[in-house]
Image (cartoon, rainbow, N blue to C red; front, side, top):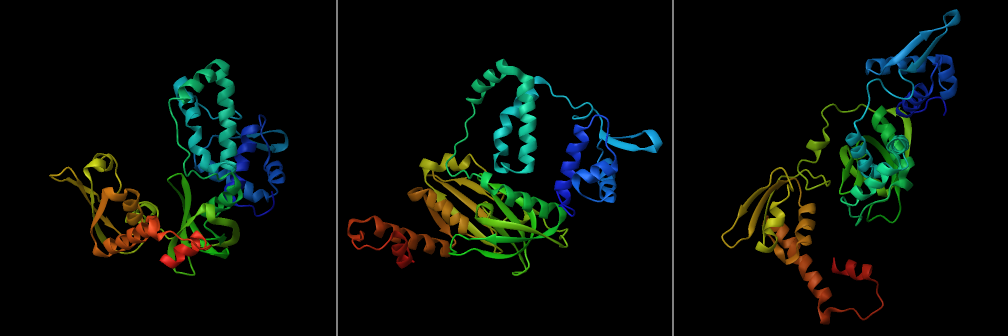
Length: 346
């Protein structure tokens, strides 16, 4: 660790040092280990106390003061009943998006301790219980190779620091680097997205973490906007895509899929009305139609856009292109690639 290391990482490492010591360590010792100034350690200790962490200060010979977290590696009164320990252990899979990061490392350490405490018999039983819960892996992203990127994004968010992001969008052939003011990481359909402000566009944007090839935290801070709220930012979307319009969408779903659609909350504005023929009319107030279009396409012939007309036109052209591609007389016999044929269709 070097002088000027990001605050979040430094404080996390300091907490680990305070947990590991049984006799306490001085400010100077802690500063040497973390390679920072003693004043920095004193400020961090003050932050911990304000947060309610049980920091114990003892005075030894010649007024030598040392610090530790009460009860060494644990916290006073922090115990788990057997069923709570089992639940925490079974839920470890939901931290997978943070695999490889320093937060993941700490979580893994905690899970290993639970394993030791439970013993082989209990773990054998848990293997059976785990079989009752299964999470599909279709389309799930592996973020173990993005640990450094995620760590740096978290640092930028925690300290309100500018991050230089190297990003390759879906349509780009080459990555582009620009500065971003990171605000939050959002998980959507088992994928991580960064929401932040892009000064170049003077607007908030969303970036898929899988497509961020590098993230470098700059020493320059940015002024975080107090009025930003991630939930409000995405309130007009059907997931993660942000737009600035105001669109009323009505979709009719066939009787075959009506119950499936009714079973889920797709958007806060949704209104579902069963029709006399068993179909379902769903009304939504959105900021854009990109995700609505993909949603309708996923239902094939079982979904029809009633309004707006512009979305109906888009889907009509989409289906015409697909029908041509699937029809016998529409097959390609030349050596052009699928991507080239797709470009021609557009």
